[in-house]
Amino acid sequence: MLPKLISHGGPMIWLLFVASSVAVAIVAERILFFHRAQINSAEFLAGIKNVLRRGNVVEALSICDATPGPVARLVKVAILSREKGREAVREALEDAGLAEVPRLEDKLSLLATIAQLSPLLGLLGTVLGFIAAFSVLQHDGAHAHLEQLSGGIWQALVSTAAGLAVAIPCYAAYNYLVNRVNVIVLDMEKAATEILNIVTEAPKP
Image (cartoon, rainbow, N blue to C red):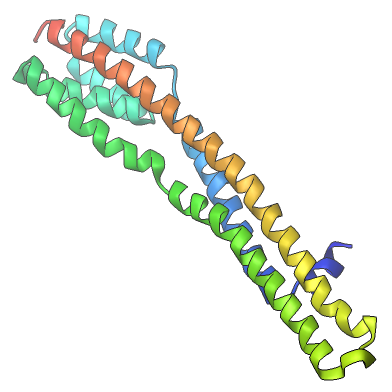
């Protein structure tokens, strides 16, 4: 059934197929990225705090390097800036946080664009299908057979359905991924506040 629908979809169906393939790749890549980026920050910070209390800065930096995700990178920035004073650490954390957000939001705008354009591509395919059907009517007039019109009607209906079939999951995936970004950013903000207190209170070797 699906191959038959694709064969009747006209040229727009292939553009929608490419768009859906790109969307699937983006969603899969972002889910894996967020899975690695989101760690148990409370446990991580507790370990860093214990290490810094012993004055072992090198070990704390090694833990940060071995831990993936933006929280670990923020903590490393704070540790490296610890001797410059509280305000300098705060500014360094703010700058590092601003640098991390674009990495989290990478490719999400493309996914949103696919979600917005897919219904329009489907609508364009619908219009092209009806143009083809009316072209047959204009050429053959009252002598046109239903079989001659069915090609354009098929194209119109399949294009509309395909556009919506691509757009709906893309919108859902986009909202889900944006929510994941917000959760990670909130985690980063909490971690930044805690590590600021930790490094400014930790004894300097």
